[in-house]
Each structure stands twice: as structure tokens, then as C-alpha cells.
Image 1 (cartoon, rainbow, N blue to C red):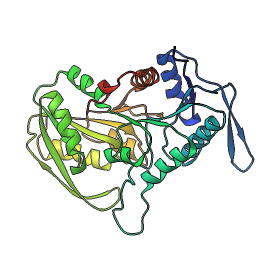
Image 2: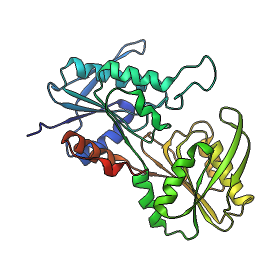
Image 3: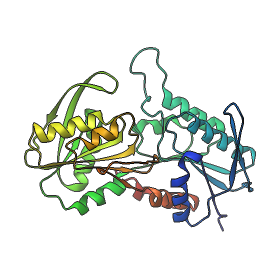
Length: 311
């Protein structure tokens, strides 16, 4: 008989971890944090983890203390003789640094992968990596789920006619094509040019959206500059009937919420991989708790999780 798994939460992801533990059917594990006066902190498991599997749940969005906290918890579990240490990272931060796009810059995603495995993680579980090839940065198994397993049924339930799936940039064209395949809809691509990060120089659309209901698909929404510019262009210049957006990770930095609320978007659907508060009326949240709980249960009991890999 497979011994039971234990679930522990990083402080920044405690809300989602509680939901996951409830869906899994186990209580959240007890962990204490000692805070030093200079800001240093030390996690301590308050129950035995010897010889079993632990799931450590923590998204690694900024600040960087979130990543450091997860690394310390992994190291603590390793030194407490856990047999299997699964880092559950609903949002894998630093994933935008997946390659050298100019000289003398780091490949941050690879560095984070090295840190996680060096700390002692024996498995990684995450969702909608910014670049799929990041899975290859690890020498341990990576379970990479897709939010499409949640978003596609949600879109179908809207019952929209004349549906068109759109990508807000060229990089998301594969993702948009996959959604269009599952939803049996047309697909268009928004082409943008940037002069610097988070600043769009110009944008145009490849395809026709006139009198169509458009769904913009992306893996994350940060400043919402690209998303809102695409939505405004599709309605004001291209004649779209309506525009909605689905993005897995709601980073929502800077003036993102204000931009979304003042845009032509009917609504933005995100998940709770990153904790949210004070959301405007146009932003709604779908929880990933049941999906991760099911993946964790099946991994622990050596069952297939391929049903969660709906791209």
C-alpha cells in the first residue's frame, strides 16, 4: 500500500495550497517560519516527513523571496529524509528568461532549474510554462499541465457563435492554433513590434475578425499593454463583435488592472496560480486547485496524468 503524501505551502501560495489540500483530501502540513530582524527567514517542518512524499506548493512570482522560500523548504525536506520531494509551482517565475536574446544576459529559467534540483527537488509540477523547452532544463521529471483543460470547457459553455481564437502576438500562435483545433474555430494572429520591453511600437492583425466573437489566448498577462491594445484594435479597427481574453497567469503589474477595465475587453479570465486581490469587475478567476490535486494524487499513486496535457 502506498503511504500517504503530505502537502506543505509556501506563505505566498497558502490560499491556493489550502484549496489543493482540501481537494486532495488531506490537511495542509504544519510548517513554521522563523524571521530574523534583517529579513532572513528559516522554514521548519513541524511534523515528520521521513521516507515519504512531500508536495511543496509555491508559485515563484516576484519578489525573489518566494523562490528562496521554496528552495529552503526543499532543502529542509531533503535533510529531513523525505524520499520524494515534488515542487509544485503553479506559476514558474523567471520563465521569460529562457534564452539569450542579446549578448551578456543570463538564462534565468535554466539557473532556476539548476537551483531547484540542487536543493533536492525530485520532481517538478507546473502549468503553462512561458516556453515549453524549459522542461528540458531539468534532469528530473516535469509534469507540465495546460490551463486549456479548464479554459476550453469554459469557452464552450459561453455558446458563442462566429467564434475566432486570436493570439496577441506571434509567439502564442501555436497555443492559439491548439485552442482553435479543440473549439473547431477560426484563428487569427496579432503581430506586434516592440522597441523595448513592455512598450509596443505598432500592432496589426493577420486574418479577418469582422462581426466575429474573438477569444484572445495567452499564457500570462503582465502590464496588459499587449492584451488591451490587441482588444482595442480588434474592436475599433477590425470590427470584432466582442473580445474576451483567457490568460493562465495573472501577473497584473503596474497599471494592468486599470488598462483592462478601460479597454474594449468584455472580460478577462485568469487562474489563481498567482494570488489576487482587489480585482476589477472585468477580471474573473478560475481555480486550478482541483486540477493540481488530481495530478498530485495520480502522480503519488503512479497513475497516468496525460488527460491534463490538453494543449
